[in-house]
Amino acid sequence: MNALTCFSLTTTNHIAHLVLNRPEAMNTMHPTFWRELDAVLTQIHQAGEARVLVISSTGKHFSAGMALETFGGAIAMDDQSPEGRAAIFDLLGGMQATFTKLENLRIPVIAAIQGGCIGGAVDMVTACCIRYATADAFFCIQEINIGMVADVGTLQRLPKLVPLAVVKELAYTGRRLPAQKALAYGLVNEVFDTPEAMLAGALYCAAEIASKPPVAIWGTKQAIHYTRDHSVDDALKQMGWLQGAIWSNQHVREAVTAMKEKRAGDFSALAPLKHFNEIGL
Image 1 (cartoon, rainbow, N blue to C red):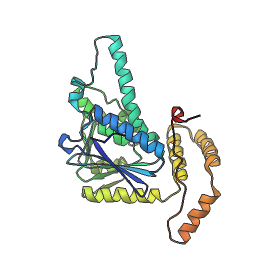
Image 2: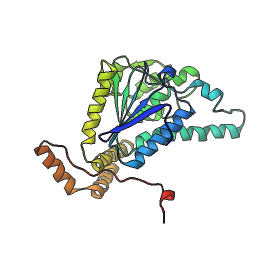
Image 3: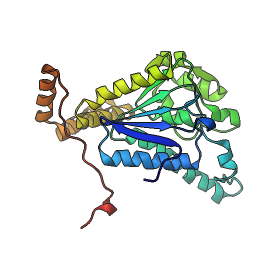
Image 4: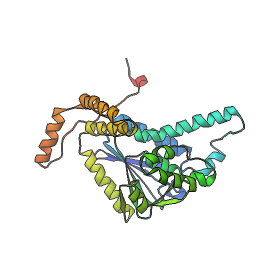
């Protein structure tokens, strides 16, 4: 993968850490941002080395969302013909797919959010598993303030996370949701006084996750997301199939033994993935 310009990526002790690193531009999202994020998530998904992903940012704000100049230049939103409007559908589908990769990643994703989480950034963090925030953080569905509907996942995922009336208030008004209210509603797991304390908390949680059998974490994420979108009966059936597919007596024995001996467990990594067209005959 080419050198990143919108992010930095490190992997230490099975924890991948992706940092938005354009604070001078408030970490806004332009075409390069989307391309790099998509490529990074594909790489992490396929490699199997990381057991958890932490996403944090730099500067005053986590991200101010979509770079408005994008639609005036790099991306043309043609509303003058049915063909142009159809192309908007396909364009949005590609952008939605990038954030859906966060949700479908084989490992959990923790977002560490400081300052403003605005517009497209809300789309992004709602696709993550766990959200931590600083005391000065706020969330804003900015799209309504600039005359459009939020379209890359916020309106689909946020109602699964907080009460529907709260989503409607935020989406209709474009008001800011401060960190303490976000905590009360369950959007964030914990609020920290400083970005440093927040990142330490996120990495501590990541280390806990990374200490578990990766395939059991994979199965747990699969089950939680399936349960969210299906009936209890369907989800129980899926759980039986899932557990039957990945059950490991070895993992259970190793986890129990490691706990008794007060040491880290020794577990197999997830298998690396390859696209079908990359596999030689």
